[in-house]
Length: 363
Image (cartoon, rainbow, N blue to C red; front, side):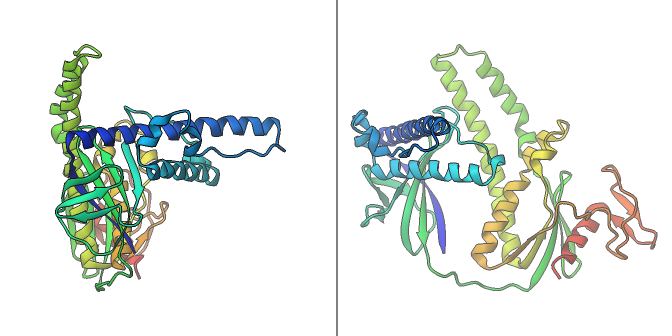
């Protein structure tokens, strides 16, 4: 089984410059290959019988010798990323056509492969091709064969390495419990287990709590002259505010999802189309802050790691409308109805009733 471990890097100034150069070269090659692919596609429409040879990173090295200074595997992986983006587009048009990478808006990163031990850990440092040994904080150990390493940089200038490790077959520890999880805005999650014990997890609202500080930083940035050093400083302050919120949210989601996976063998969660729901501007910010998609994504991969079963309820399953006692689906209830009584006499909390109905799908 492949697992990734992410660690903070502490590169020297020359190493930082090498990382930045590699980020730029990978972005440059990706855009060049995408540009040529678009041209070849246009030509093939004019002449369908023409045999087109797809571009590779090696094609650009004679014309742009600076590409020879960086890790060749990082450029090869950029080609693989482009191939994957194309395959995804032709598989599902809703994914969108591959886009050109931007220095300012896209994530700065590159991936290199481990060949003959050129990616390894020694004496508190990680060895990377063309870079050498880089100091890093290994906060947890792992066993297995290193397959690849992805180096990335945040908007605040912090460097990280994500090491992909082949650990063979996972030894799973089975659990007996089942749980149904209803997601919401007032409470982040409403959970009911097979003992019919319900628990409501408060929505932490990290963005809402820091909104005033973020807006203050945004106003300060807007007042700075474009291209000035003060603007760069203000941009960094704003990026740190957003990074803190993202880290708080990520920490909350990881801890909650890990706890659920540790304690339960079967997990049922409702399917929510966040993208569609965010078209409602009244709740768009709250939905973006709560991050349901990321929570379900974490549950999904952790269930695979630990041998759990994750059931995603159909998006049309009316978990909030059905009585969990008698199964009757009554009149549709609007969002402001938080409690209701069924014709069978059962009185329900809307969210707890939904989590019980989801739990029933585990049987």
